[in-house]
Image (cartoon, rainbow, N blue to C red; front, side, top):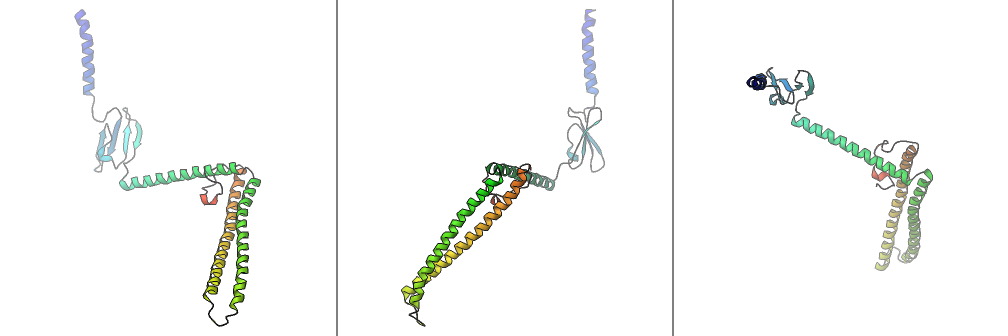
Length: 229
């Protein structure tokens, strides 16, 4: 009886091994069953992704034959390039949105209300107005310096002016022209500043009204008076 008892476990082990050996090895791996139809219409089954079907859809089945998922074809080089370009554009869009949100928050911190924004506008404009007033004074001075030169030039009607007088008049002309160009730039700067603050104020009003930072579209750095942080 003891010998018979020792034989039973051995027989069970042998039967289990025989069952495993009899189980089909193809198409039954630990990850499930991959199946596809190749270019010639032949159905292929494997326990791993099928190289012959990399450009075709593959079906991954559970061991009971039910569908686990569909494995899409491996993209071609051109398709991969397009996917990467699409992902890059999406990443750039996310970065732009995050940058806009940061700038919007900075704006609201810097300008909690319209009064603070208006004071900032006036301060920026006044800096340029001071420069314009200085240019105006400089032009008046140049005009006053030019008058005696013109008076002296009247003594040489139809004749070449003395070199010293000619040089003085040329220098006065050049300085006057340069100052007028500077004033034109300063006046253009006034327009630019007002345009900048107008656009900024329109955005701020929407933010103060409850718009979520970053939802108003990107805001280029050159159209913001508030530095990015």
